[in-house]
Length: 183
Figure (cartoon, rainbow, N blue to C red):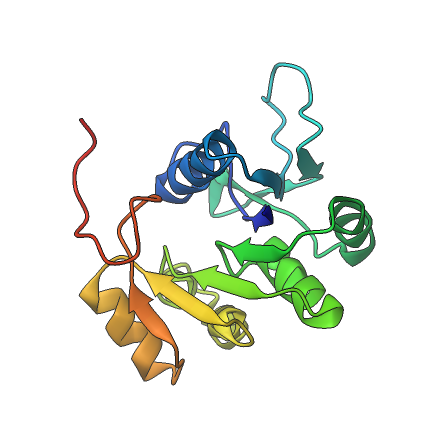
């Protein structure tokens, strides 16, 4: 299967979403699937570029400079994904890149799955930009399934009237398994 992964955060940034996306890509590839990643470009990134990744320009978030923000650039994302021809798109964040990935899937009729890793609407209020909360919460609309690792996150999805919710283990362990610590 050909699977596209889209995230507003990725390596070299170290966080839970990055870990999950990296792990899912590795597990998919180890099982014989093709997987590509759309993510921000980081200024400190080293090493050769990976043809299985599209890295888009980004700027530091002023209130938290380790976080990078990319503009929603549909054309380069569409060109990259059209060349890959995904059979499924998995959007991991609801920022600009996640929104672009969601838009791509809906326009092209590609099945879409979204994951709720981080409560971005809550973060927007914490950082004083609560005006962005409604667009962030809309990122889960239009997908065939939404995944969240904890009961509180599933409850948040329910409050935002999202249907087709399911609890999933962290990483790619499996949709019905209990989360477990890595060995």
